[in-house]
Image (cartoon, rainbow, N blue to C red):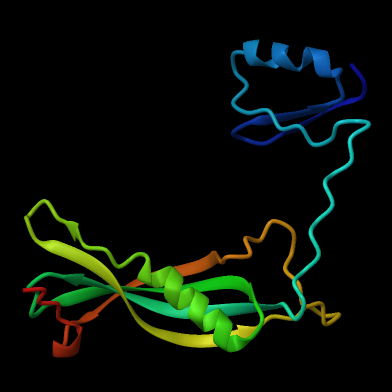
Length: 168
């Protein structure tokens, strides 16, 4: 075993050390270890990242999903605002992809009460092209190109007629 360091907080201790690959299976026998993270393997290089598609830009799209309960005519209705970051060729393509993504969540589910409930895309509220300080137009490592939800907020509002859902 090589160099070792220990970091402690109130709830856990973190050990960081270098060891031979053949000794890694022995870590499974440690009683109080909750997780093991391998940060580097000597002699292996990370896979190269694919080149960004031509004309690809990074967008943040804010959209609103409304939760509709079958037959509800009054009271409060829950809705969710989401910000999704994605790579697209244009603002129009970003909106189309988020619309497709949100529509995939619209299938009805049954509540314990026997009523159906569904989420429905109400509107795309805002679209912003994201640039960093250097004008770099491609997402950071680990971002899903299809879209990554980076923020959400659940709220309630008074139900009005245009947000009612009567499937039959």
